[in-house]
Amino acid sequence: MLAQTLDDFELVLADDGSRSPEIDRRIGAWRIDPRVLALRLPHRGPGAALNAAAHVARGRYLCRLDSDDLI
Image: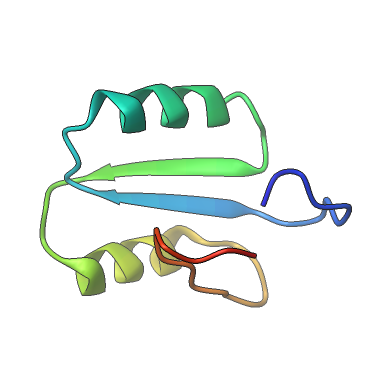
């Protein structure tokens, strides 16, 4: 997502209660990019994570990507 040529976007990451050190490292690295907003949420399922991300998103359009999707 961050390597594409279009740079006018906001990426909202909604972590649904992950305890993985790898996820912690990646989110920490992505937070330096002003286009990225990372949400660390308690585990409540994918619906709650999507709703939390949609609630804070500021863009006109919303594109949902899950952990196994590519863009």
